[in-house]
Image (cartoon, rainbow, N blue to C red; front, side, top):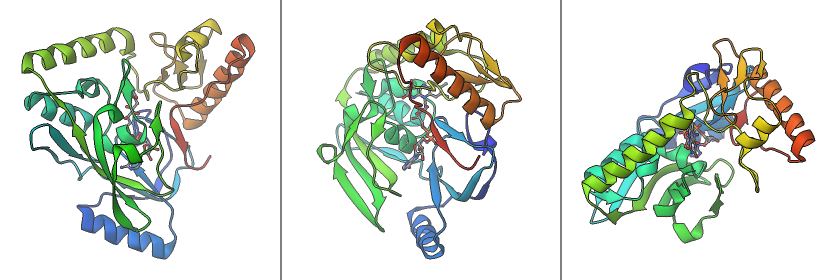
Amino acid sequence: MARHTSLRVGGPADYFIVPADRADLERLLALLAETRLPYLVVGGGCNLLVRDGGFRGAVISLEKFDSVRREGDRIVRAGAGADNRKLAGCAGENRLSGLEFLAGIPGRVGGALAMNAGAGGQAITDCLESLVTWRSGEVAVAGKDELEFGYRFLTLAPGEIILEAAFALREETREEIDRRTGELLAHRRGSQLVGYPNAGSFFRNPAGAPAWRLIEQAGLRGVRVGGAQVSEVHANFLVNRGSATAADFLALAARIKGAVRQSAGVELEEEVKIVGEG
Ligand SMILES: Cc1cc2nc3c(=O)[nH]c(=O)nc-3n(C[C@H](O)[C@H](O)[C@H](O)COP(=O)(O)OP(=O)(O)OC[C@H]3O[C@@H](n4cnc5c(N)ncnc54)[C@H](O)[C@@H]3O)c2cc1C
């Protein structure tokens, strides 16, 4: 899984499956149900730490579900496997605003929705209109008001898979969309260009103070465990200096949590999803 995650660590999955289309996915899920094989759906792997023992079961990539299209006046519909930048790009080309921030967030639409990804006070659910998922053996469609979501979470049923989503956007000039996108990307380049493989913010920001500040105040900027290091540029980014294992990241995360608990009395929680066997 090191090849399929932005942290570049993680042991092998028993199966890595890329369904061609929805019918193919449905056949696969029927087979997995029959054989009782566990599965994990991944997008870009940009928020995922797979342990060194890998994943026992099937990892499913929806990268072929990558269509993005405009529907009617203000709706853009995207498959779960579409790259976030493709979605932001399609909205911009159609002079529709609301998803500019996604241009700077790596990953795919399904992962961004599952994480309720966001930046600068905006999140992907802000302009979500409806969500199509695979739930309990059938396709389900939910309007935004039927969903439960908040800071970096969207509640899904066990095994539920996001298939596609529709976003309701605002009309805007191309110049203004490009200006906003450019501003957001420039801000990111200034604060987050950490130079090594990473998964963005490793910990959720607790109420009160951003995680990076608590980590910095605990004196941990630049601290290293094996090949995993607290970035010198952004203390909530843990980076792979080239030789890291998942165990290095887990040990570094435990050290950070202990130090922040001691220095600030705050219990940090991982934003990165940790899966697989140790
Ligand atoms: C350099 C960098 C910067 C980042 N900046 C930000 C930022 O500003 N804001 C932010 O919010 N995040 C940020 N991230 C984290 C990451 O990009 C987002 O969380 C992204 O939305 C994850 O998408 P993904 O497709 O890579 O998901 P993955 O990492 O593949 O998966 C994440 C979770 O979603 C689940 N999932 C994926 N697809 C589906 C699906 N179709 N159905 C059901 N569940 C699914 C997975 O099982 C997993 O639990 C950053 C990451 C990096 C590397």
